[in-house]
Length: 271
Image 1: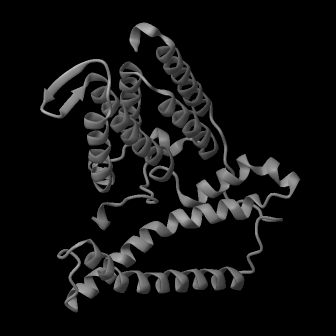
Image 2: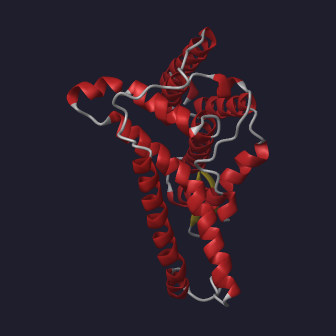
Image 3: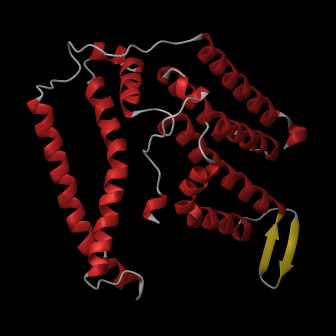
């Protein structure tokens, strides 16, 4: 299960999304999130699903990787569907058996919620972590929020903190997997017993993991100090970010799609 978590990983490539300016990509991501959260009809959410699928194809990321990233969330998706289907009431009954009643509104809302969750996770990963290197992401965040420096906001430190956190997610997952394998080799059992027993069995994993995380953080801090790292003040960039006409066309297309979703939601005959 741990190996299925791909959050924070970067997959090098030569696709349109890989070539897009990271600053424009962050703005596109914001528009995309607004578009997904604003969709509240079956037609609009179907359009979102198609847009997300097109983004995945354009990114060049293997569909197996996308499916792998959704696997850890399978329980959440099933739980969301069950809650909406069996506990949400409406006016139109589709199925009734004793005390079990399934309404059309509950079924539609389950489809909306599941599609929205999948689109959020897939679109965010494809537009951000999968196609953007940690260094590019740091530079993009710093450049976009640079006006906040005038009010003494530590923009560079904030961007660096976010990037390091994303970068260390795969490292911590790998470390957790090693600790679990080591504990299993010593006879530890994490799969049998009740909920309380399984929770107690996690203690031999969490303690070494926290120790390892603090040790890695300390080593990183020492490495940065040895290289005389003092934040973003006075630092230059080896690679300057440049926007291309295709980036702005991409942005305009996403804004247009967001506006289209808004009008679809406001159309009574499509609700």
